[in-house]
Amino acid sequence: MAGSGTAHLRDPGETLLRVEHLVVEFPVGRTGLKVHAVSDVSLDVKEGETLGLVGESGCGKSTTGKAIMQLPRPTVGLGGVRGHRPDALKGEELRRVRTRMKMIFQDPISSLNPRRKVEDIVAEGLRIWKVGSREEQQRKVDEMLLAVGLDPALQRGKRPYQFSGGQCQRISIARAVITDPKLIICDEPVSALDVSVQAQILNLLEEMKARYGLTLIFIAHDLAVVKNVSDRIVVMYLGKICEVGAPDVVYRQPAHPYTAALLAAIPVPDPDARPDERVHLGGEIPSPIAPPSGCRFRTRCPKAQERCAVRGARRSGRSRRASSPRATSRSPPGERLPTRNGQTV
Ligand SMILES: Nc1ncnc2c1ncn2[C@@H]1O[C@H](COP(=O)(O)OP(=O)(O)OP(=O)(O)O)[C@@H](O)[C@H]1O
Ligand code: SF4
Ligand SMILES: [Mg+2]
Image (cartoon, rainbow, N blue to C red; front, side):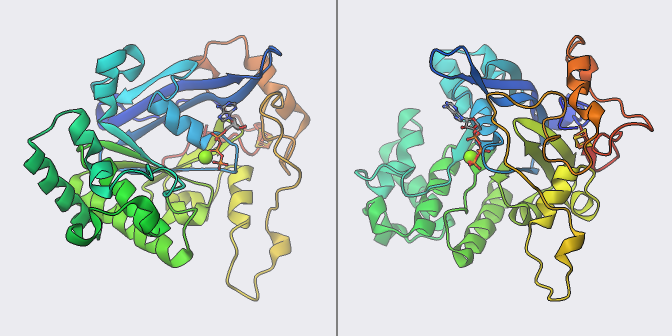
């Protein structure tokens, strides 16, 4: 079941970021209706870990990332980098805590101000927080440009339109890392790039992570990309988490039918592979304005049973924490008990 459990969360003392019961809803004009973009999502990330957040377009990946940054603040839910609770902060304090978390976006060119020079874009965080003298800031900018593979002497005076997409993503990474954040949320950082450049940027992110002691949340719709960079994977469907686990376990033995279908969608370079044997997703993603009752995946799940439609309704009277799924021998297939590495929630 695409669910609301917290059984997959680790001890709070072990994790850098912990998000519990995150809900983000957007009003639909004045109709009284709401887009249920993120519905009771709980996740955590250990220091130095890369968490891959994956799912089809519109499942709420970016909204989850932005809600962690409190941009905008979630409708309900708690979360924050260790020792800080952004949801409890306002104004100056909130802005300061946000410097510990940074976001890198999908479209590198439009995420950079076209009128500003690269040195000013990269130095922005230092200038806002008045970190160091002008000379120290300049030195730090040069160090960051070098670290992301750009020649400071040649590049610092140029503007974003004078760079390729891959180079712009390098500048975005330099801008994010310069203020010494703990956590970087990378929202589809390579989706807009050529395949050859994708590999370079993924390698760069790995290098920067090791060099600056970063923790990453890596958002992508492509399970193949996420597998290679993640220590743990969270699979989302229509605003909910379906499965959490170590990449090799999730890939080898997906516990949730949706994960199995996503894996089946990855092209296999084997002429003898028999596509008919793999699980394929039919139908469209339902509207997040009126998501299906019970398990949100049930309208497309090849293993759906009648009770998949009502289970959520039956649970709705219980407290959130108590609503973690309790699988039994009669549970539908996507609703197994959590396992040590791969879990449905
Ligand atoms: N500001 C907003 N106002 C209204 N609806 C929104 C807003 N932002 C996102 N949504 C809706 O919330 C849902 C989740 O959107 P989100 O951008 O988080 O998905 P996503 O998983 O990042 O998709 P993609 O892979 O296409 O980037 C979608 O139905 C989207 O239309
Ligand atoms: S079997 Fe039922 S509960 Fe499990 S994923 Fe399919 S629809 Fe959801
Ligand atoms: Mg997105």
